[in-house]
Length: 404
Image (cartoon, rainbow, N blue to C red; front, side, top):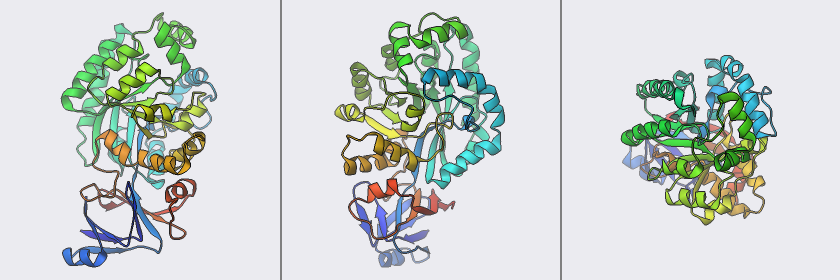
């Protein structure tokens, strides 16, 4: 048992002061220091600097660790140009990102306060390094393949990777399933994967409506994807439309990444099904896609969280940077209110979407905590200052263990 005594504690709805936290793997009690000392007389007391703030560890719900070698190899500014550059450089990028490269990416997330991340794994090459990571990991085994003739082989590969991830037994590691996208996965494969995910209660995610090319292909089997599928896959028509794709996930809340080109009908379905949208503002900008219309999501009570995506479409894996970009991109949103929503999106709301007992400094939650050193006593605009100023993260705790 430990007792940590900050000046301030950031909870989802208010800022607490002059209280301390007793914790082991979980937060046991929040109360005045003297009271905690009496209740837990053998606890180790942790002394912090003046103007210290404890807040929840950040949760990055969507990141591609396997592509962390990219810096200048891929083309930006247009989604299709980027996609062709990914295909052209794919093998080189994967071969260049060995364990040291992936560990560097994971460690950089930890340094920026990310205590939990959702790894979208296409090949399973990142399994060992994710198993060894200090953070909590939701390990999304990704399924991809739109050709019916390859379905059996692709599914066997997916099953092999899923089984390997299920063999990891450490605390904080959770096997999960990712369906790449509606245009790239055959419905037969989706049904088979979802049958397993639902039976074993594994978390689900998918890319959805990231580009205008996807919109045109799913609606009309036309647009920029027409030549792409014809040349690379000898495919002249889509394998499903967006309506059919979303129907697979009915009754199973799923994290849908990007969703910047959704229509009214799709948003209604997403709302009814209680799916969550993952907002990746820097990735969307670099790939020439739209800005997510968060007001449309809020109008339909659609939950949303912010994530970094991978280094194939970002320059760093830093959620403070990501939510800062979102704060400025959405210039029509009320500043104070939106800043609070952004911080919740990478803490309590992300935890809820992933089904994790973390994301809040609340009794009973896992002790995933950041200690920040503020310049002075915070005011009513604390959330904005946390986003726009790079306060030093002096200590990081994950499941009660100090990792920094």
